[in-house]
Amino acid sequence: MCGIAGQVGRSARTVQENYQAFGAMQKTLARRGPDQRGIYCSGRAALLHTRLCVIDPENGTQPMQLHWHGETYVMVYNGELYNTPELRAALQSCGHEFAGRSDTEVLLHAYAQWGGACVERCNGIFAFAVWAVQQGVLFLARDRCGVKPLFYAQRQGGLLFGSELKTLLAHPAVEPKIDANGLAQIMLLGPGRVPGSGVFCGVRELLPGQCAEFDANTGHLSLRRYWYLTDHEHPDDFAATVRRLRELLLDAIHRQLVADVPVASLLSGGLDSSILASVADAAFVKAGKTLHTFSVGYKDNKRYFHATKFQPGADAPFIRLMNESLQATHHWVTLDTPQLVQALYRAVDARDLPGMADVDASLLEFCRCIKPHATVALSGECADEIFGGYPWYRDPAVREKYGFPWAQSTAYRASFLRPGVLGGIDPAAFVDAHYQRALAETSARAGLSPLEHRMRQMTNLNFYWFMQTLLERKDRMSMYSGLEVRVPFCDYRIAEYMYAVPWQFKDYNGQEKGLLREAVRGILPESVRTRRKSPYPKTWNPAYLQAVARELQRVIADPAAPILQIVQRDALQRLISAGADNPVPWYGQLMTTPQTIAWFLQLNYWLKTYRVELV
Image 1 (tube, rainbow, N blue to C red):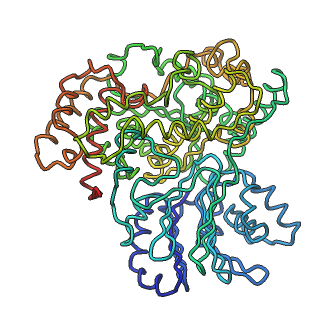
Image 2: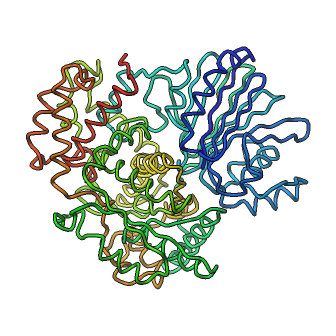
Image 3: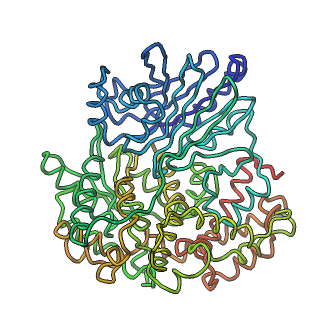
């Protein structure tokens, strides 16, 4: 993976006047691309790149240029294409010749040949920009599932873009200002945010499956959705569905093992990561190589763990069982409370926004420990959204409850706010409007039963809201250490196929992700294949709650603490005093009391460090 950024202006003078800013913008991307740096600055355009070398280090340097049929194309690209061989063959039949093996070169030729329609031929995770010099047009695109980020802002009559928010904020034309709408997103929806919003004033993000053209001659920006989840008649019976899913899944995993650098696999002992590790291990053994797998745990978790409805069992026994079934080399990473607390702040530096508290911080530290051993890692992210694994898919009472299923705490969140801080925004109406819009955008064909219609809504809500929050977390926390994390379950072909699969298939045998379990029969040990779902592991050590409570107490003792511009001190004091007895989760089962306190620490740090101005 890499980092990309740039500016296109209506005149060369605009770019020349901002030349000093480009170094600062590129510097913000150094962690995403620690191996190489490049810059193209000519005429009305500046394109910046930092590279993490994964395939063809010698021939994949960027920005990359191509002269084709009288036009000069300049591209910066962040991502991986998983159908590079097929694209290269198609382009060669059109007369294209290639100097190397990189997917970057293939993608650039694909744009030269097919223009913006090239994105519909690409299978991968990507965000890229192509500047057509003679035409004076900049093309931007983002992958279908939103795995790779791309932010932009229209300023000075031109367009700025970058892989991360901090990259845009490094330009003098983009100030860290938040209006009432942005603050409402932070306080009422965070760590989620409205699709397409960059939270800061005037900053946007390309949606998953969206592309854009900016005409520097006219200053006009046009946006186009080239892909979204669309309902259709499911063509297969159950047996055929199982076979097709297995084919798609195995193909996706094998395609994502391709790299010229070490590839590892995350292993939690759950269904999703165990599938990836098992398939990857078999491929490595066949190739005469050894896979490395990684698991994260927490000091004293064995001592303090207790089963709950959402986390019915510890991971360690299943991880050990998987280790016995694989020929891989396994690495245990154990995190302790002081490490987690300090990492809360680095996680904000990585995400540029308050995030998922210790869920972010632990992944940040986990990835830091993986990086010395591997440059690429496979992760089981997105399976629950696509296959219906979460409790809110399966519990009828929760499924039918109005509102975002992971955010049923609007009144509780609003109780922390200082009066008038959101201006005229009513918290309940604000959240409701976004929920209704998401429902209205759901594709559901006529004649569906109420259950099937609701399952389309649930899939759409999860895919474009909850999953995006998790993908953002995965990208920022991993890329902070220059680690590329691939998510095979997020292959768009799987999402596309699964969208219309009947719920009775997905819930086969009355078990979460029952269809997926059936499709991988014979790949995993049976006790792992049939194991109940368990979420991303977090610390159970009471010392963590005590530590973040002390830290927040210290913060609010300072009358000048930025958080007190927004939040009432008394409300924070009540949160601290309630401790483990507070019954209201901040963001589903992932963020209960310790994480809520930690989230407020992140909020204060973000306001202070990013010098956020409320307007």
